[in-house]
Image (tube, rainbow, N blue to C red; front, side, top):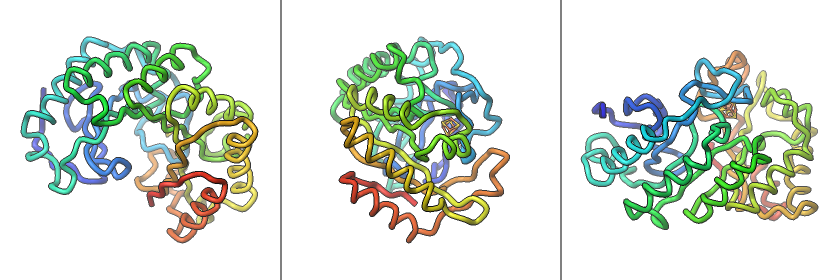
Amino acid sequence: MNKQPVVLSIRQHDRNVAGLTYVYPVVSRRAGGVSIGINLNPNNACNWRCVYCQVPDLQRGAAPEIDLALLERELRDFVDYVLNGDFMLAQVPPEARRLNDIALSGNGEPTSAACFEQVVQLVGRVMSDFGLIGQIKLVLITNGSLMSRLSVQRGLEAMQTLGGEVWFKIDRGSAVDMAAINQINLSPDRVRRHLKLAAERCSTWVQTCMFCMDGEPPDEKMLSSYLALLQSAVEENGVQLKGVLLYGLARSSMQPEAARLSPCPVEWMAVLADRIERLGLSVRLSV
Ligand code: SF4
């Protein structure tokens, strides 16, 4: 394993930093410590193309075939290095020397991996062998679009037994706005169905990214449809959520729209957080 002597900072998310195919360390502002990431999309392929996406050379598509034996070897070696080696001392700033979670995330949509369920089982084996179940979280960062697949649903059910959390992307509330921001054709009704499928199987947070386009924050029409989608999911569809992870634009987009995007003012984000809370949902705001 090539362990470069790099001190990771809060903004460093280079997935090649450990020199591995699938496993990478992140000091995460979301997690407040070290997260061991699992990138199931080393081909930079996603079925969406969000205008704020930070993946370079993003392609439309699905995860490639995963070498499960290599993934398990990498994960075991890296967990061992973090827990028993000098990783924290050599590569992590003192204030972040804490292993928070293992995250299924990366350069595309993780649930597009055909063996997603087997990946969760594999991670569960490694967590169990290192005594990590109940000690750290297993997080899935997903756009939620493949929740109707039975193998994805079974993967979420397995995650729940491992103390898992799903972070389910909902950036906007209308089909028009989702087409503009996520570059996909999706109805609010389908999003609600997928959200319910996720939340019935594993603890689920909605994750939302808000930012200015051409200097303007999302307008009231956009915000109203976003809030209406959350409200109807909870009140009409009976979706039980942990809450909403509300993010600003922390890192630069690697998409052609990058120059048009900028962070929303902190006060603007706080007002939106307050409006979400008034729906009865917890909000964690990261700007
Ligand atoms: S869903 Fe995630 S990986 Fe896919 S395009 Fe959007 S931000 Fe990028």
